[in-house]
Length: 114
Image (cartoon, rainbow, N blue to C red; front, side, top):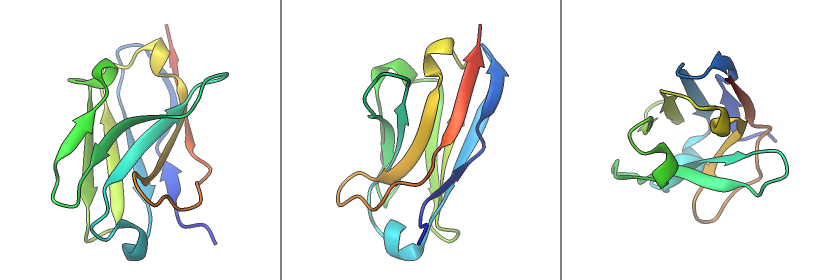
């Protein structure tokens, strides 16, 4: 049973923006800290941004000031607004809990051209 569905990726030029969405269930989101991860070709999956149930956020240095994570607990959806995109942001993006992960979804491809 698919429980994490990411969407919103695409091909964009450097400097452009995308908004990713992750649809899930109340059981998965609840009060859990949720995160957006990415995996570039040949690299390990990394946590890019996370958000607690109360809305506190954390970002890796390379995306600070450009990405914004948010959540809508009424819709069981997590978002990632990505601005000023760079070619190095190219990756498949996934969402999941930060702790007690559930099976991964298919992710959504983000490709940033220079």
